[in-house]
Amino acid sequence: MKSPICDMLGIEFPLVAFTHCRDVVVEVSKAGGFGVLGAAGYNAEQLEIELNWIDQHIGGLPYGVDLIAPTSMAITDENDSPEEIAALVPAEHQEFAVNILAQHDIDTADVYANQHRGGGGFLTKNKANNIIDVAFSHPIKLIVNALGVPPQYMLDMGKSNNVLVAALVGAKEHATKQVEAGVDILVVAGTEAGGHCGEVTTMVLVPEVCKEVEASGVPVLAAGGIVTGRQMAAAMAMGAAGAWTGSMWLTTTEAETSPIIKEKYLQASSRQTVRSKARTGKYSRQLRSAWTDAWESPEAPEPLPMPLQSSVSEAPLAKIIKLAEGGHTGAKQLATFFVGQGVGLMNSIQSTRDVMREFMQDYIEAVERMSATLDE
Image (cartoon, rainbow, N blue to C red; front, side, top):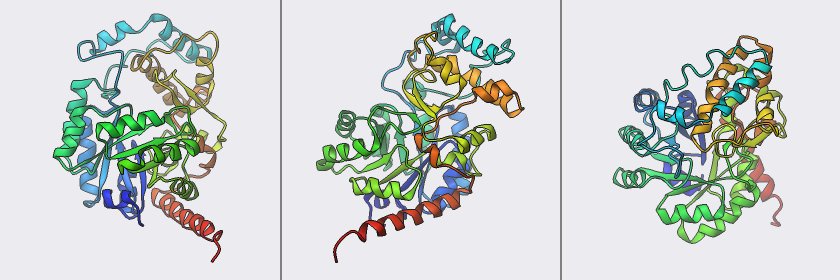
């Protein structure tokens, strides 16, 4: 295809797949797209393992890494130990979360016992630099910052290693700042997107940003609710050079999504998501459930700033998923995960290769329909 994204990334089709599953990364790149591994939650050692596996299985094809290094957080390198973070979390927030579980017949005795073990989560400066170093020690083609302007260290490493740097934006003014900072690609995400998102719809935001940054030559990947080829065709008609997708890979056979969550996705309509601060401390879109309803109630405490709210939510949600997979009725009612409004179009479980093939075909048919509207 003729697209600056294809030229820049060395791919056949300008479809970028954000996923936390290394198998999906590999399968998308092998099918002509571009897989991006979501590295939030990994520490340096875990990321090294994941990227080594990708390198061994991707056959030299291009891929990327996505990090969450927010511009501002409630913690710094001086107060980011588990004990210091725990001390910043008001007791009422954990008590509220525990009460939600108790109301659904879930034992709450050990909810927060192991919450500080494992992944790297959101990154303070020094942690971010360590993760970035791991990413750049592998043959990545793209590195992406998911919240705010990329750290200067990431931008500098990108230039010195000939790796493109991208950033997600949800508003026109944010796009301008990213271009001024020196990013190579903009991922313009409408409010329909799963995970962290802004308030403006994809249909409005994409042409708005494309017009704003046109003179810079920085290409735009459209994101937010895109799960079909015809949607990518529409985005490209508005000025985008390709699409950034995430939710659509959550129901693939290779995805490590909980079977309970996959089942909920397949049954959900496009109206069954909610945009809330209650999971991470910043607005993110997720599947509506009894858990999200509770946090939207008048009795709920105000969500804490990132990443403190994650310290409140992630441990209970992990317990909920585990119990739901075992058949616990209350846990099934509470179970939720990030997903965009495109979930209403996610109606079957297919292999990643099949999803790619159908997406490409749908795109071709959409372009042909548009071409047919022109007089010969």
